Amino acid sequence: MTLSNCSVTVGDWPSLKEQAQAIRMEVFVQEQQVPAELEMDQMDAVCIHAIAYDGAGVAVGTGRLLPDGHIGRMAVRKSARGTGVGGQLLQALMARAHARGDRVLALSAQTHAAPFYQRHGFVIEGDEFYEAGIAHINMVYRY
Image (tube, rainbow, N blue to C red; front, top):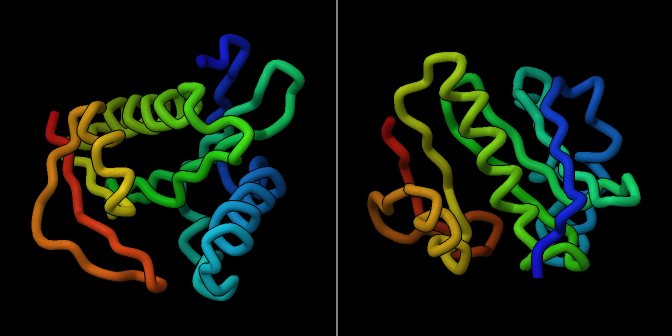
């Protein structure tokens, strides 16, 4: 299933904070039991954020691009998973990174999501580790 009427907005934290925070709290804190104090951090203020909206204008996914080329906090609401929203978010953040001159992108993927990132050209680097009790793997993309 694909979400044909999905749109992605890229912007700063003050513009997208409300939607990004709501999605991250739902996915990471409520669903995955990540402590709320670990989810929100001071880096949000300096990141480029992306929000995916469904055809009705409801925010269904988010992600962020840090100044050092790391992509993180990728989250899609359960109702929109498997629809291509995550790929659209990732592509929007990758395009923004490329436009600003980043040559390497990095992320720490939850291990179960590694195949998703591999389909977008990321490769695994290093060994699995745990963050907030969840298995992760470092991945990179080189232009």
